[in-house]
Image 1 (cartoon, rainbow, N blue to C red):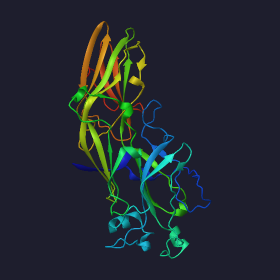
Image 2 (cartoon, rainbow, N blue to C red):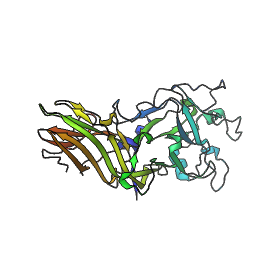
Image 3 (spheres, rainbow, N blue to C red):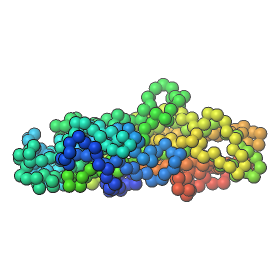
Image 4 (tube, helix red, strand yellow):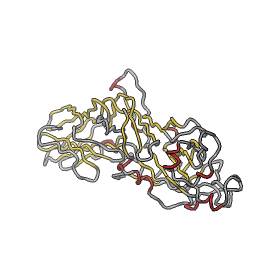
Length: 373
């Protein structure tokens, strides 16, 4: 099933926000070569303890597809006269191909973006078909980026000479096997998958600015002990089920980004394996000192997947219990946002709240023993 959404915050223009440019060190002394500014990130909520990247990681490698000059209709001859056209015009003409970059890997060393071999902007010296330098300077380039480069598959176009807009697939690094939920899932293997777009970028604007959007949801857990005298001992907290495995992003529609989900993987994320005692009036937040990164299929309504449950094994007032509950139907996690599932102990019971990490309640769990609506 295919659905539509606009990435990260559901405002495509958020992907186009400019960031401060950093000059890329190149061996050539001129500005004739395409450079990339230090990437920036967009995330709805920020926490220093999240596994979301808060700055683009040093030595991170992202892939780029770059477009500028389409083919002439019905040929494979460059249509330099259309180099100044907007992306939407080129796209609707259906003769675009990644003539500038195809799966080019760019390394950010913590200060600068670097790649090799360097690529020139279009110019009349190398392409006599271009009328003048002024014309070349008004060519409009569109760049698509994805991070990490090795976690994505470029489904389309098949190569630099093939017509078509980008179609990218990110796949979670877990296998589908016969272990079911008994498969132990190592969340440290999940990368913080991101994409970015820079539309209609002319040479005169200098370095290409990518403002990356997170594709995933961050889900953390907290144990809050609101009892006045009694501690709570938490033995384990885990998340189990059949989780969404891949997302495919299709940029062939000029007005919206089209996406679809496919496949699942089963298993259990164990956030806490060594017991922790939470004294009265204190908190364990986040459990395991991290958030899980998960794909959320919000359009189909399956969100993290099917039969996804949180299980907590705890001892309170001398009684050990294991409780398992499902995601509340009103909790609809969105890409690029981090949430906390708060297990709040009050008296001799506890309730479960899902909270965006700005501190406002997302889902009220009620006042009964682990009431999840």
